[in-house]
Image 1: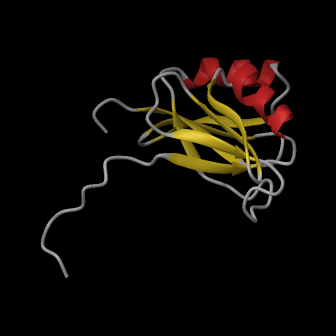
Image 2 (image 1 turned 60 degrees about the vertical axis):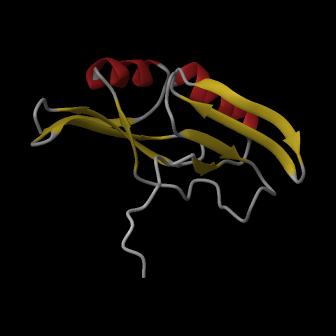
Image 3 (image 1 turned 180 degrees about the horizontal axis):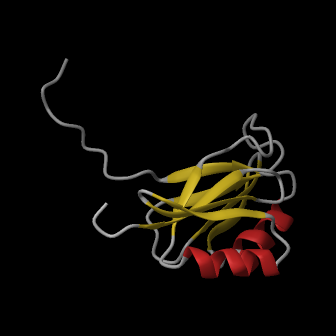
Length: 129
């Protein structure tokens, strides 16, 4: 066992299993406002990544054949926002079912699912929490 501390700096990517990469791409870019960071064909399929502008961690929209992931199986992804109410209104306008936002001790939080059922949450943190 080593006494050194870990040298991990951040998560590189989070896999979001999807059944249709083009549909997922439209959702994450047009509805959530993410940017495409990588879009290339690679064996065994298309390597497609999106992220909020300036984020260190990206989301890999993993299509059929890309690892044995089941579409909709990823849950609990927390996205921080400066205005959860405005983002919830924008999601609702786009036809996304949103639960919340609710006032909680740590901030205002809402939840929603992408077109494949992957579960995401939005949080505006309470200052000083």
